Figure 1 (cartoon, rainbow, N blue to C red):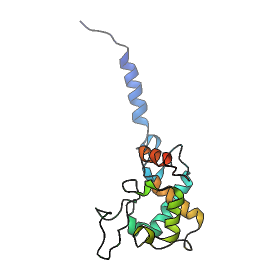
Figure 2 (cartoon, one colour; figure 1 turned 60 degrees about the vertical axis):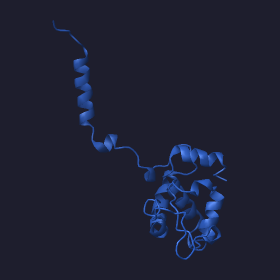
Figure 3 (tube, helix red, strand yellow; figure 1 turned 180 degrees about the vertical axis):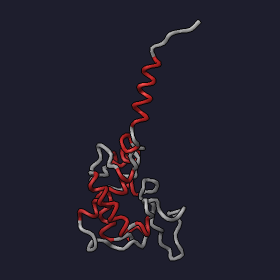
Figure 4 (cartoon, rainbow, N blue to C red; figure 1 turned 90 degrees about the vertical axis):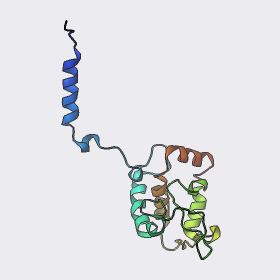
Length: 154
């Protein structure tokens, strides 16, 4: 006995529609570094600018994708300083409000036991905020929400 269904034509039409879309039309999904999440303080142009500023000023110490360059960023180096931490949400940067992140960018990392140089006279205010936007774009929604609850955008 054969059962007649009406799904056949629908499946055929859907298959045709989906197969005719190019990857650029549906896309693989946004990458963290390329997308400012809805509800976040920054804009996509800030993330884009921050990507360039970060690559030129920060990546050599914090990694190309803000992932850090050492496994244990909490272990002191031979000179007694701490290595540059990851900024992608896997270390402690998300515990600090933007005001503290800007202080570190401006004054360097000595106050936190690091060797990061001061960028106060190297980067303008917009570029500093763009760098923060860039590395915060790597933070997942849970980390970002916790940061906001702690008063992060202050």
